[in-house]
Each structure stands twice: as C-alpha cells, then as structure tokens.
View 1: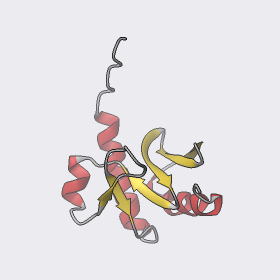
View 2: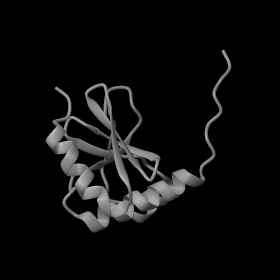
View 3: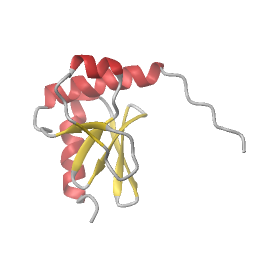
View 4: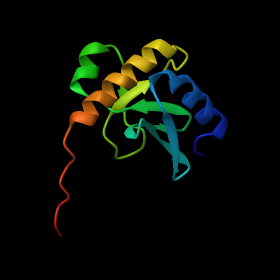
Length: 108
C-alpha cells in the first residue's frame, strides 16, 4: 500500500520545529532527514524514529516496532500532533547520530 503523500507532508510539517526536514521517497515509503541527518522513516502512514540510548532514557515510554519486515526496532511515534515533544526527540536523536562515527563498509 505505501504511505500516502498527504500523511508524509503532514508529518514533515509536524517535525519542522526540529530543523530542516527533508523527505526522500524510497520504495513507496519515505526516509526522513533533519539537517542532513537520516533519523527515521515513514512507513504505512506511521512515523518511526531511530532508537538511541540517550533518546530511550529521555523518552522511556515510547513504543518500539520495526517499520517493515526484517528491520530493527525504531520508536513508533503514535502522537505526531505534539510538536514540542516530537522536536525534542528528533533534535536529541540527531545530535547523537551526528556524533556517532560512520560504520565501515565490509570488503567483499
């Protein structure tokens, strides 16, 4: 089915307090970036944010679920209408991801 473009646009609007939000269409779903940092996905009209230890400590009650079959768990954001809380989560997540060194690609 995929994500409806109206939902993706609404989610981006709700995330706008966190920084410069950009959506990238991927396989009928969307990758979500804030200030150039990939931090989440929108799948099946649901917003998922990468889990970091810092965000998990600051937002302990957030449910976790994989955005698609075979994926790792992400935070499942059930209430995208709370802009302040959403922006705080995204800013914290992106600050941690920005400081994390990139993974080295395996040689084949």
